Length: 252
Image (cartoon, rainbow, N blue to C red):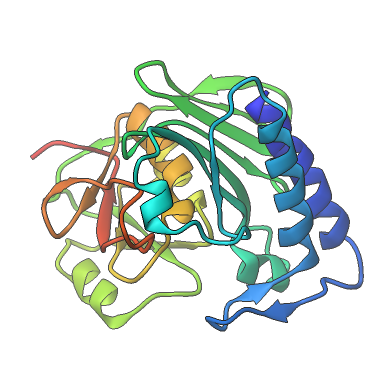
């Protein structure tokens, strides 16, 4: 059912994507907001509210829930209705719908749909991660095994947010290949076995990462908080993520 909700949101997004008017506005943090963000959010929130579960919803496009109200959430939905709005506006296809179920601060289910690519991804804790491609073929995802000392590692970076610290991190590797892409596709490239490391040494929000994190983890990868070397966790007082490094199947 969560997959259907993501697909329906994707249809709303593509209707705007294929139109002449994105209805772009700027939010208080100077990030863009489009009609596609709003319409997809309505579809997802309505769909989740109609499920038999009655879990609360934290979404990028909903009014933020105060920490004293949400700190006791045992289970909740974490939603980014259109991850990669800048890429959407650029019309490069690198945007996704992200829906995660978080339990006690840990993502346990994730659904990511890439509407322009028509690729649907999902992962469930202890049950693996999968993709349905545009031809309707279901494949299990398996992250690639590697060591940090391997040459020519493929390092994923943001198309819109590459900073000096990330560039310096990449320079420590032996002839790394830079793979630039937008949205949560950065995690999914690794889950598919097509890249090795994604350093995010710049701010992100929890809804940017939750769904893709569990998909990558279930493919054999990991997403590590650089401050404490532990997996990225959720429903913190601030919904801003610490800097992190995501790995495919790393062997020390």
